[in-house]
Length: 105
Image 1 (cartoon, rainbow, N blue to C red):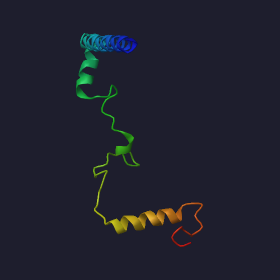
Image 2: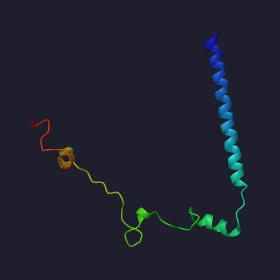
Image 3: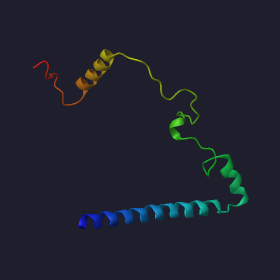
Image 4: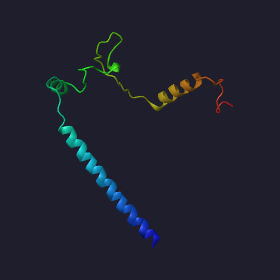
C-alpha cells in the first residue's frame, strides 16, 4: 500500500514539474518576442549574431589577423599499422619511459 502511495505522489510531482517547465518556457518566449530594441540595434541584430558586429572567432584568424581560407580539418586515411607506429612513437617519447616495454621484458 505504501508503494502505491509513493508511486502516485511521484507521478503527481512529475506532472507538476513538467507543467511548470512548459509554463516557464512559454513565459520566457513571450517575454523575448515582446522585447523592444532601439532602432539602431534592430538592424545590427539582423545583420549579425554578435552585438559588436561581425567578429570572427580568433581560431579562424592567422597571426596577422586575416581570416583563414583553408580547411581547418583535413582527414587522411591511414592503415592500422601506421596508426600503431605513431602511437608507439608517442608512447616511447613520453617522459618516464626508459625504453623497455612489457613486450621486450
